[in-house]
Length: 201
Ligand SMILES: [Zn+2]
Image (cartoon, rainbow, N blue to C red; front, side, top):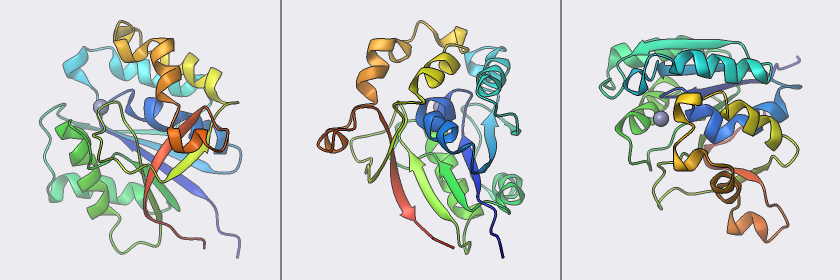
């Protein structure tokens, strides 16, 4: 039986997925069905963030987005939150989510919610690095996104309300996509993931 490969990428706010793993999603969008789940509209950053994110994803041909409408900065991990995510993971063969090793409470909550919603599932579960990952973040899997990088940059530029942030600057971004371990094999533009569980089905 043909097993359809299906990625679900999960973020707390508009721009989390774009920053952490959009190059990977672009790279695999030819082979995988891709859904995006975003917990909040990022309203603490203003009213335009959801529209900016939608535009960013559409610019690279991704338009299956599920907005959970939870409170930016304030949502909690409970049966209600897990229950919102669980049905959206039913078809996933690979989940890209946020990491527990992160200074932002919403990012850690996304990790905890994902873990609970994906329990007892034969699914590959990876967490992507974010701008607020701590030094404990364990980069174990690298995806070379050299070819996808220009499109990722363009998509990030859709986040006009964030444009002044230091980490949105091109020079900063170029450095952020370099990892010492990946550079030893000649890869100078990668997205980094921690591997929590992996299945080949
Ligand atoms: Zn975030």
